[in-house]
Length: 507
Ligand code: FAD
Ligand code: NAI
Image 1 (spheres, rainbow, N blue to C red):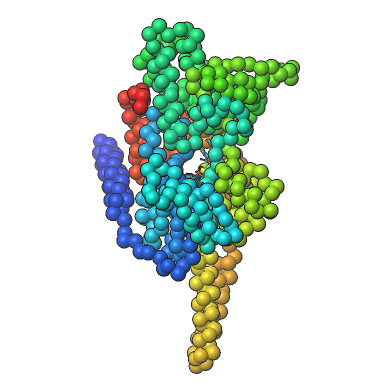
Image 2: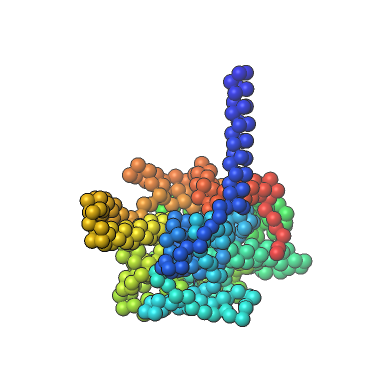
């Protein structure tokens, strides 16, 4: 009984502690310390983008050393790993967004933010052209921003490979508005299929949800979609249940090529149980408003064409270059052989330029285009910039001390000693190692409360899949959320969806 009493006390104290920590964090969030404006003589550092790379950079950057200007058409950071969950209402979209002004307000020294799209980088004049693309436009909606140093973290856009009809008829899954559009369209298809006297052929088409691309985006979305249907839609509209179908189309022989063979097999068998059909070795060639036309390679290697009717089409075939990146690459001869983005050196300097660095999906540093890589690059670059500022300050100090040696010869011994100390410090700071990516592993949700994980462990790799991995997936992503506010909101969304189900009202 005594042990029980102690356990109870411990639980109460832990809960109180947790509430206290969340409340304190909320208070700090709302009432941050006073901020000061950096010296206007400092260099102007422009940061493009508010995604994984740029925000990791801003988080670690000492903004007192530069005049920081952040430019992005999105005034928030988006936690992309949980974006597939927003397509079904498992998570509400605002739970995975963090306003960039909130992030910048917590820096010691103020930084400027402009909600705008950078449309051109003139690296010779060192200016960036920016456009306010929002619905509400002021008298000025186009201008130029000069920079001394530039960090590009504009990410990538959706690859369509120029396949006809893709842009016009399919939904992508990269931004919040994409997830909202998918959520609306799922319910639109369902309600239209349930319309009185709907033809059977049309019901089958409307309830056929097709996903193109068997990478992690396509797989996670297919899993979330099936969950939504099984947990909620089926219960509310049982008459359409037998007709609902999810198909995942992949050009390669398998889905999730970056995972180990064992996890690919596990995912494929789980999809079979979940009635998600995988059409492998199937390359989509054309999309119309109601059908997908694809080339299938049979077991004998023969190719044939198939036409697949669909109600909802989600296109998830990876990344392509953003126009601003393409344009900069054409200006720089050293970039002419680069295809996937801005080629950077081991310090993330854009090859063939001065004072321009790139991070994340728009940079080619030899790693996969993932959030993990982007955030490690951003953090590395911030350390580099903090060091550069320190280096400059120490070099100035050495210069001052050296000139004081001539002016006040009486203090020579003291000044020489200080110069030696400062030079030692300078050497230590200058000795920054090149960027090295440390892979922590890959995780993906595959539906039915199952996930797959290839995780780095003691110089090796651990591959696991199933329910337990799902809890690991949840706790890993919860801990990786940007702020405590995001963590609380995501956890509450999960609880809310478990108790009340997902909201099926169509916005
Ligand atoms: P982004 O995060 O895309 O940010 C780019 C920023 O640049 C945005 O703020 C954008 O608005 C801004 N921008 C765009 N154009 C301009 C312009 N012209 N001027 C100024 N700013 C501009 N990776 C993982 O490691 N794990 C995961 O679980 C995972 N899940 C994912 C799930 C989904 C659905 C998706 C789509 C991706 C996922 N990724 C995941 C990949 C990961 O999101 C990307 O690799 C990561 O976002 C890249 O970071 P970034 O900073 O380069 O670009
Ligand atoms: P991807 O590039 O990983 O996969 C796209 C898939 O589409 C490829 O397998 C390709 O063969 C297929 N494809 C291309 N054209 C096709 C066509 N015409 N017809 C049929 N199939 C076609 O793209 P994805 O999933 O969008 O991921 C982008 C990046 O983001 C990757 O680096 C990925 O690792 C990362 N990511 C990571 C996640 C995670 O770790 N859980 C989740 C989502 C994305």
